Every structure is written in structure tokens, then in C-alpha cells.
Image (cartoon, rainbow, N blue to C red; front, side, top):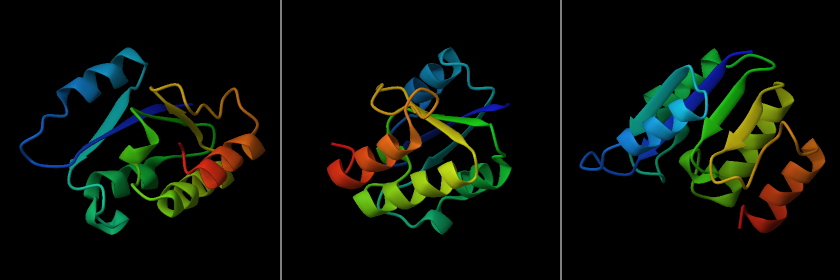
Length: 117
């Protein structure tokens, strides 16, 4: 199992260093990040695309919060479901989501019904 981290800032003025430090402290060995708005399409995020290509079953993806992967409920649900189907574990540093300890059905319910509220 490889532990990956992903960070994103919404503007090029913002610094991702705080997120990078937190991801390293959480055990991420390979860290990817984009400086791009959260409303951008997945294809417009080169580092996220590279990360998604690199993930394998049983890998762990850590993000500060789920909104780093997508802003809308639909985007988050699609991405979480795709990762779960691939056998990738997902953990957020805000402690609101951890597929290593939560049943997958509960994870899907949290993301879809509550929109990761």
C-alpha cells in the first residue's frame, strides 16, 4: 500500500505549504497538488489526473478535506465512488471521512445524502 496525498489551492497566489505539511505529517509518501479553482474540470487539473492514474487497489489517498477533489456534491460522489470501486481507501484530515474505518455504504451515504455536510 502506498500513501498518497493531494492538495489544492484555488488561486496561484495561495500557498499549498500548510496542506503539504499536514499531508506529510499524516504519512503521505507521494504528494500531488494543483493551484487551480475548485470549479475546474478534472481534466484541467494535471496533478490530480496524474494522481488518479497512479492509484492502485489498497492505496490510501489523503486530502485535507473532500472539497479538494471537487466542489459539488455530484463531483465528490462520482470521485469517491470511483475510488471505492477501484479499491482505493480515502481519508480526510478534517476527520469527516475515512474509508479505512467506515463501511463503504456509509461513506456513499454521507457523501450523497449530506453532500459532505
